[in-house]
Image 1 (cartoon, rainbow, N blue to C red):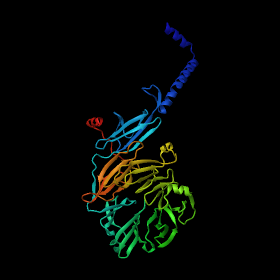
Image 2 (image 1 turned 90 degrees about the horizontal axis):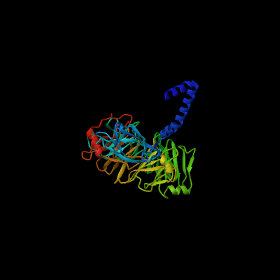
Image 3 (image 1 turned 120 degrees about the vertical axis):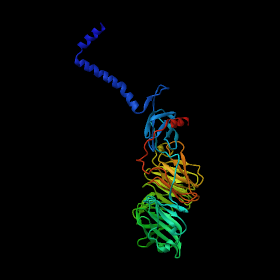
Image 4 (image 1 turned 135 degrees about the horizontal axis):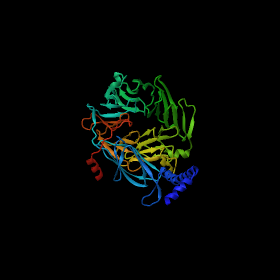
Length: 499
């Protein structure tokens, strides 16, 4: 009987009534489901224990090589790197990335509601690192150059003929081109190099006394600039964009030399407390605390800051500061005792003992190091907004427990720092959260430098016993290519789960 009543009801409904009813059902479903879909799309789910709606977060994981297994707590995810794990409830998690024949990577991190944590530059190192013999003959030291092609100077002895140019692309060595026989016999007292500049200024001691020689490793030219150097320079300054000029500091005056014409402009910038040159612009810090930028002919001055108050908060009362223009608006100032300052709050980021700096212009990060610490100053980090000074950079430390840190290099596209601490070579990871992971790579000959080139992802050092040149490849130098994914054996998975 019920079926008959239902049948008559349907027969009495017109097509318009059916459409109207269907539309009402659709609107009702839309009103009920649309908010749920939107909540889910914005990372909201129902908390299984608390039975209330909470916002989740996510973690992005990418490794080199790719294809590594991902463990979040005790659970192994079906996806391999690169992968995004979403719908994570706020809280602390333990992340582990594992690939057979590679060292395990592990990190504890915190998920915040509505935020993403990025571990997009995990560099997995082989469990066994095997260096290659590049040159078996012994050397005394390595002098890194910031040139293209990547090169360094291999030192056999004190004379110039015992300083050989090593081309990292070709893996060969040669004498510096264009050097006269008399110069080859001269002793090398000092060598001045500049960032991304193929030119070297050598201070030699030979039959003619002290000589200053400009060597262009790119153009393979040699110019004796001794006749125009009246007083022994304290420092040289070179501009990669303009090879026609060299500047040098003598006492508190900046002089200019044009090597091609032999012209000297003594006291070109007199009585200065700081100086730098980049992209055909001069940066001058006057004695009364005025920072100016101007063209090379000293025209078109631009004032950046002035006044005794700003001067006192950034600089010590005495000493010359080398100016490093990092961006058009951000500068670093390195003082004679390793005082490092920037023109952003909190101004002074290292009171004493800074041994060197390196700027990563693709990510706007400044690397600096002391005897025991390595830190990266991030001018673009979103974490700046949570600081007392919202416009101030974020400083992340790669290590605070070094013994005698001498050299640092940006590695793996600015996500890692390769450094020499005493005679040991390490690789440290700069992470958005947690304690940096530091890996031991190799041991170099005592008291010698190392050389790293990002182009091939290779570090060069002298063998502690045989003193020959060794090469250790950290990565391929191109993140667009990686090893094919490797399946882990069941035994390896069990071993991972026991850790």
